[in-house]
Image (cartoon, rainbow, N blue to C red; front, top):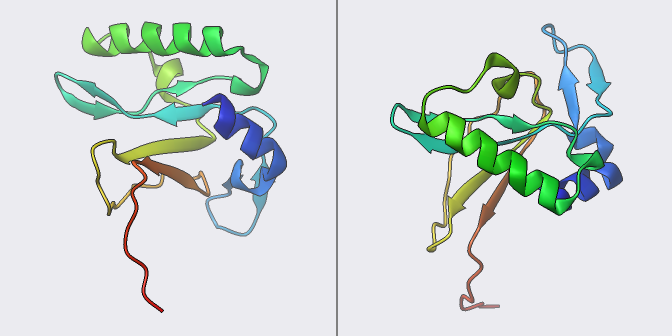
Length: 122
């Protein structure tokens, strides 16, 4: 999450929202980064607020807090709202394709996965 926040600082157009008519782009100062969490009721996407101001330890503590609440079905609306960018995991064990869902009005979603060496042909 911290690396994503640093990247969003370099590419602020990815940390933006569009208005309902899609005629205006609003850049966001806060990096409220969403991550999917598995719960007994399915996947949800809470977001860590103001990642740009947090240390790695603070981010880890916030993720642990949200996972505990998510597992118990007790995440609040504030944990699920106001996201500015979302990370999606396409597979730590080798997933190669994904169909990430963009949370409108966000303008981008980042996908992470396992790297692998593949043959290259000219």
